[in-house]
Length: 206
Image (spheres, rainbow, N blue to C red):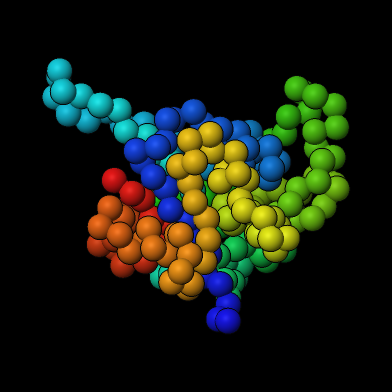
């Protein structure tokens, strides 16, 4: 079997904007204040009285042609063989070129803030990005990795597991029999900013 290429399909008709994906991601990845790998963008469309609210969850797009990779001067950002774009925290120098290059706003800078004032020991929790039980490196860029530490164990990303509307599906885009592969090729599917040639691995169903 070929190596999997991880992808995600998000059904916008099922997303209720509960933000459980945002909370689950923050809890799973122990992100500091101001750093959110998963956000839900709300938009109102239409003209009164025919208006409706659209919820657009936005993880990292895990692009096939990621503009964030070539701009990194120290090669800290790269693509894994499974298609996931990751950051080598030991190489990252915090120049933030990748943040400027990402057209989806899916990267955040870690300024070293913590929730220590909210509860004791917050800075001593294990951070999956680095596998550490001590505070993670500060002054670097962080991003969604489709919860690589979970997929390596055969689990799905935390945002998919917790979605109360089953709006998120995760799987192998290289497997034509997988649910995500079939949905990604359906007539309902589209990707954000396709005109940029980034080839995102996140598909939306309208």
